[in-house]
Image (cartoon, rainbow over all chains, first blue to last red; front, side):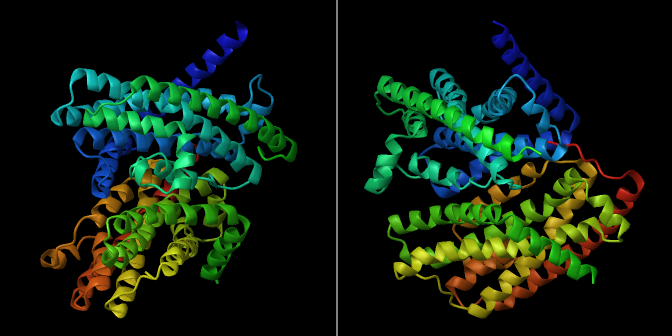
Length: 254
Length: 248
């Protein structure tokens, strides 16, 4: 019970941190609000997706994918530079857990705002209320697998004592292999095998089916998504635990 | 001597943070390969060279925002800016020195993209090599000025560096849109995108050279603005110092 309360306190602390940041940095808020529309321009120019609903939904999911990695790993680097990461070694929770739990409120708040910004476009594209609700659920669900990757990148960045998340190249690979840019069917056989193990593949499949109103086995897609996402999260937690102990042993947090 | 010291510092950092350099270069290369592979998949081999040079131009623009524009915030977090001010080195000149990192990253990214294309016999060429080189040189001048302007703005408003590159996403989309030769004269006047469009146009035809003057005029204006911003922000820094607490 104490452990749950203490984790909730981390989530609450994260919420205060990010709300305070946006409250006191209006320019950052303006940049954040402009971002989904700029990503939409990129997605539409690439020709990914077939209609306005698909473009809007892809914009939210792609922005979340890039942000999850950069924000968690970037947060770790900033905390190290500010000298506060040292305290993570004294905290009752693991560093990866602290980074993840304090980031989650930001993810959910930003996803809700991004969704609110792009929802009018989805409505203009012919989205029904049921489609909008499903799109919101998908946008929020995306956090599960992406945050686990963010945790791994954060630990590896600290371990290597680098000044930037040095495995951020996984993001374009992940997006391509997941069918976010081009359909999975058009990918080489080897990449298709990788795609099947990625939770984001099922996330983008659901997004496409939703945007194009096409028939899909939703139960199968959702089950596959939850199964692969849980496997990723568990594997990431276990891997980051090992990496984290190396980080503290080698002084990567200092 | 100060210029040499700034360039030495950034060259040294390149070696120290080699993983970050290669990661940044590989990430850009993978983003660049996405539209190129898309063009190949739909049988548009003829447009590969044009897309490649557009992507090289985009890498220069995006990295100027991230590597130069975001530098001051990082250096402030490290607490090293005051020492540079004491040594009479302008923080914005220090940020502009990151052009070393930019050139290294873009060169590696370009090589990574060219390698598979060359294997397929599709090594990107240009109809007008001189205009292409001049367009990219002018783009680099505009990009450095843009990076310095962003750095100056960050001193004033404290925008986190991760958010400074928001424009590059839109620029990526705009650079990939179909290029109408009738509009190239007007397009060449757009800061950053102008020389990038000219680089694309040089890959297609040999008629870009008369338009280079447009991009040169814009580059001169942007560099003048960057110099003014440098003076303005140096004054601001002398008055109130650096704000080192921010979120990435």
